[in-house]
Length: 446
Image 1 (cartoon, one colour):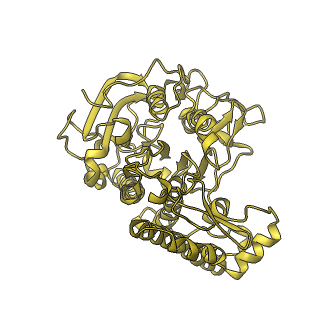
Image 2: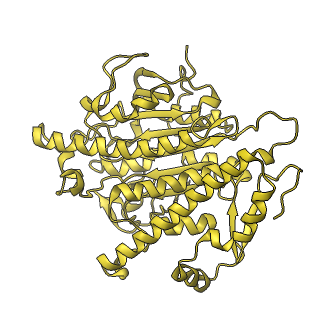
Image 3: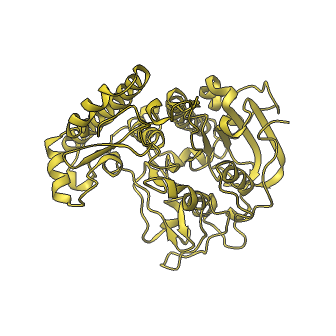
């Protein structure tokens, strides 16, 4: 690819040795005489399971100037881009006569707004999820209509929660009422999907390149060299920063593969998955940033853990599994452990927020052009309630979102009303989603 003084196509790729590398938005892609490029709006949902300790999360006052509670404290630097929303509810995640299974219903109803059919068999049923409604429209302009990412190993077969299929707990995304989208947890697989061989699906060729540990940047080196000569100073700096980010991701994936190969038998663990939760989340976060930055997709769901997960966190002194202390029965020691988990997850989410806020995108940052939602479908793991759910919305300045506020809505306001509003602001207006009764007001201020 040779760059000239002409406007560079937004879909321009660097190519070489069977690899293709998408580019971020550069000044060279903006027509002459145009002050700034208009960036698309992206949608991101980051999901946390098993509820939170409400006393550590929910602000005591409404409006501006609210006190950040301990769990939310890491978001203080982004206060002016943060909306804390309370009293949003998923009524269809409640039992409604089906007995136990709150974790399964939480996962299945979160983005669909419907009550899933209780079964451990093949006759699963929910509805098209909000992310896939967005993907149907926004995906027409991107290489991937959506990405479904996660951390915990997903299981779709059999039962995982009181008579409910594992499909309900292991994904948020539903392409159709009977078609859940699988979650990808392997950073290597995500990386190769974004930057790997475009012209062949030959697994042997990809494996050979991986064994050589040949960098994607090495494959496109000649095209990168030509590109630099045709760019302005600001574009060169942006390109160098972007390429270094890719190189860093590759390096970390390779290190994770080496560690995994020596720690346990390869047959029992996919390549490229870091041992530590924090390392895993950071890798996936960096991949999300690049996927958005290069406009390879505009819709991402990320399950920081699957619903009902009992992953241990020895690094924060919770070796018994994270699900256990959420059933605290008012035991102070268990509550303290549950709050450490809440704070740890939020801290890891803040890494993603920070990266998006640092990434220039058109006339602002990636965060300005993204509606990024952090939350879950269980309020408190001790009660398994689905009302007043933990919900934080960040970014979206380009859509008119006004942050720095805690908005308390009327009790039992459907969470799906928020999805309707987010879709509308991303240019995907819908009349109805699940149990929605309309959109949410006040997001753009009063």
